[in-house]
Figure 1 (cartoon, rainbow, N blue to C red):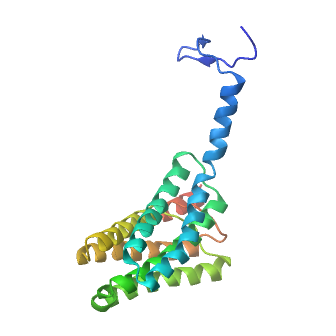
Figure 2 (spheres, helix red, strand yellow):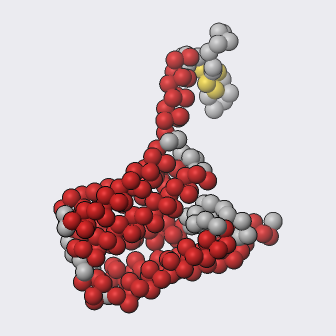
Figure 3 (cartoon, rainbow, N blue to C red):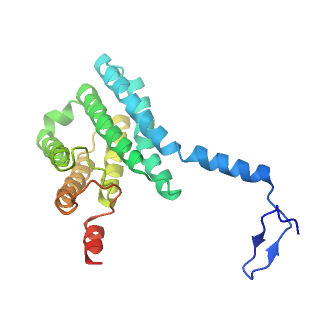
Length: 221
């Protein structure tokens, strides 16, 4: 057996040399893995770059162009997290970039809603104020606690983000659906409340915490 060819073991432990992997295949695999690990951060950076463009489009009244740029930006917010988790590419830098991108895309989305769907502010201002106030307080508490935005990315916050994205997509494509709006902001407020508790429980900045139960479990070990 050529010692330069890595062998593949079958479940019984027999070596399989029928399809040996040569140096070129190994190099190709390494190159693919190297390229893939940059994808989540690249998507976050793209959202950061798209945010001022979206605000400009909202101010200019370009609703069609704004919508077609907003939708992939929102989709990439879900995609980057899924890619990072599936391929175990999560990192502190990625978590920070994602948090910054989330804040900027939220501002850009609010600018578009103000410009193209003012009825949401007019008819549902109280619910919107509760949602925004809960989120802003979490930012303030995190800055006071850690000197930076938190990046817990809990399971609840991911579910909340997906529901908010669903609401915004329907808003710009089909119009306002009040029950979906209140369901989305209700879950978002619950997510903010969970993050207040995490800010109290976690003394140092930490990324990718699945929930309060994870922190409590770690403390008991």
